[in-house]
Image 1: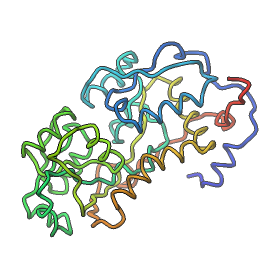
Image 2 (image 1 turned 45 degrees about the vertical axis):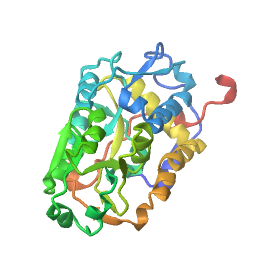
Image 3 (image 1 turned 180 degrees about the vertical axis):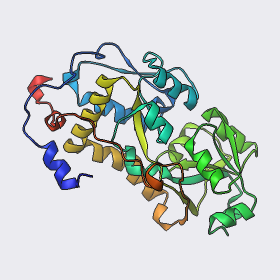
Length: 301
């Protein structure tokens, strides 16, 4: 694995030639981002940033897909239905890494695996004496998750009772109606969810944070070399320019502070479904020349 210093050195090599696939395919027409991601300010802004950093790959714009469950979105990616879904950000799994094309840059530095409960107002006392996974289970508390989310398998493997729905939009309503007790969401998602779902009946749980290894990537179709290269190049350019750091600070560092994550009781869980014996999935770097990662000169835009 490359060290940070070596990675930066490689990225700062002098430019030698134009991009491999720039302006050759896929640069015309809007790019369809899975609607759940399009509705997320963080992911929509990240994809927009990556595309804006690569004007040498052609002009483009983002549009939202039709509403659909995560499983359907990944099926469209696998089938190469680019007009239905061309880009989706979902959690990594061995199956997805084999069947789709992950962009080998973990989104948000793995923060998807730091998860906090949304609960019903007035029920904080049910969580106040929990200090472990066993305590949570002995209290008879249940968790809500998406049917096809990798989190569901992880939680069930650790002995939690998990209630599921294939549609994200149903889960907060199900929580309100008492179908389960805790809707686990990532630290970069939970405040946005509550802002977008106007209700006086739900709140952020005060004390706990569940943690497990959950890398998350942008995925494209297996044969979509143009978009895979463009996103990889765009994200690297954003890192070099400092724009990625600003994005991460806005959507993750600030929620970490507001949610007082480091002062919470940590409930660590294993993720036995990752490759390499439970360590984070290691993806090979794409065979793209390092000089492509350099920012595009202003005069060439």
